[in-house]
Amino acid sequence: MSTTLVPDRIDAKTWTRFTPGQRFARYTVYFALVLALVVSARSVEIIPEFLWDAPEQMQDLFKRMWPIAWAHYPGGVHDALVETLHIASLGTLFAVIMAIPIGICAANNVVPSKPINYLAKLVLVASRSVNSLVWALLFVGVFGPGALAGTLAIAFRSIGFVGKLIGEALEEVPRGSIEALQATGSPWLSILSKGYWPAVEPAFWSIVLFRWDINVRESAVLGLVGAGGIGLALNAAIDLFQWDRVAMCLFAIFVVVIVAEIVVTQIRKRVL
Amino acid sequence: MTTATPTTLSIKHLSKSYVAGKPVLKDISLDIADCGITAIIGPSGTGKSTLIRCINRLVEPTSGEIHFEGGNLVALDRSGLRLARRHIGMVFQEYNLVERLTVMENLLTGRLGYVSPFKAWLRKFPEADIARAFELLDAVGLGSFANQRADSLSGGQRQRVGIARALMQEPKLLLADEPTSSLDPKTSVEVMALMRDLCHARGIPVVVNMHDVELAKRFADRIIGMSGGNVVYDGGPAGLTDDVLKSIYGGEDWLQ
Picture (tube, each protein chain N blue to C red):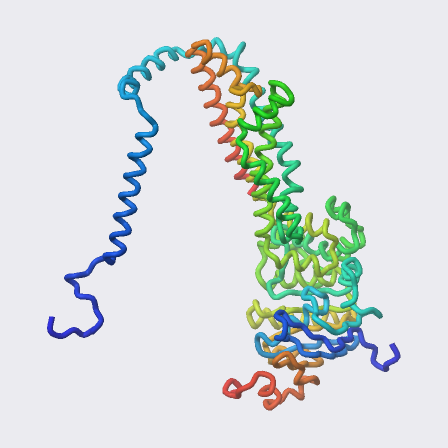
């Protein structure tokens, strides 16, 4: 290379994507990932014998599950399944009723007061930081085992989710239309119902349906801690090693989740 | 009011600084007479919009007084301000309609200051309001659009709804913040003509800020030229000579 038209051009033969420093950083990250994998594998203490015969055990389990105990459905599964749906729906309803005011308080443009915003956000975070199963354990302790504990567990876990998303939807409402309503001398409540509500309505229904969909799945396991629903039937069957009944329960949950998915998708299509 | 020409709005020593020590409006004093269109022109960032928005306190003035209907708007508390705003209509550059509501519902939002929130929520507006809304829809040429959603309208149609909504308030004063800046030239003229005719028929004075000088000359009865937060011209459209325009906008290359 004696002459180059562009003096500062990098020589084509020595071109590399990364500088040596960058390359070193990348290899360090790769090494750290491998190290993390090795360390965690050691701390899990996999017992090789259990790992090797896992396929065999699996086969055995499936054999015991087949044929599915269809006859068990009317007596042992149906009522529990309906109860699960009730827990999910009532829990979602309670959650929405409580989440709307808290979500409004969390939106700074609707309630322009930092202390109230932070207080509302604290409530929402507290609700979300506790898993449904843990809420269920708490409520089983308070109200005893049954569907009431499950419903409240679902409701309290959902407040955080629904309230947070409602608050965020409200904060994204364009300022212009709200400003226009303020300029007409509208009271706060009218601005809420004629300015904010129409703007967040599609998001609101989408959030509620999505949460109901999640709650159908979550309420199916609440029975494991005694909070009612199909989880109770599932737990009983597992404890008694009645694997064909376990299969029946799992199949019922599977069908309900799919139906819920279809229903939610169809409703959402019509609402938006 | 003892003066010969009654004034609707009287601005006295109005100042506004968003950042302390850097005033956008510097001691503005203006009287807006009882009728006609007053256009505020001036370069971008000179405080035209701020001035308009200070009048109904969408922007809080830093100091000064604004007298309207016998009271000082700047001194009003929240509920007093809300009641006063009912008598001041406003039209916006971006129309600011509630997109997912119908044209009719958008017009009725102009009555929200007079109707209780509960009745508004149930859509129980007085019959007189609904009759008035249909009347105004015809007046702005959107008679057949009552049940169409606002987000299905074109820009010009939206601004007509915006004007109708403001007139639904039966205002004593109409503010317009760059009402034609998002519209094409033909639609701009149509919207300005509509605003002039409707407000003239109802005896509502209009304060409008705009950056199209020709449009201002064509429609305004009085022009206020602003530059650097001060009023540098105040008079009829005829007095807006090239020298005056130079003092408002600076430079001269654009005056060809």
